[in-house]
Length: 99
Image 1 (cartoon, helix red, strand yellow):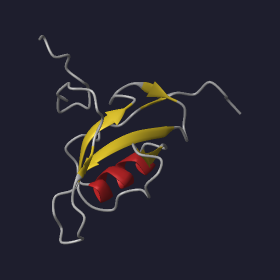
Image 2 (cartoon, helix red, strand yellow):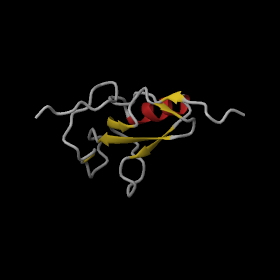
Image 3 (spheres, rainbow, N blue to C red):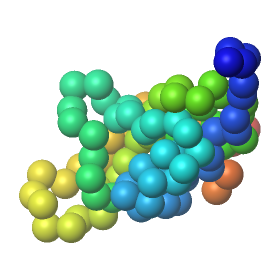
């Protein structure tokens, strides 16, 4: 068995959570919540991820996702996103703020 196999992390930013989970499993990785104190989100849109889409990872590695609740009536609302003040590009990469 080859132990140094790498796969590209899927680009999950902009996808619905369910679609992101499925795509991650197809890519042989798993998604985990950006906030370890809360259960994995089951609704909303992925607004950031780490590692970034395209980064080589090992099969089974976790991809941390941050999700914005799109208000599906589940109450609570709010956003669980990284605290860094940098925008995220559609490929899952973070674009540094020039300011």
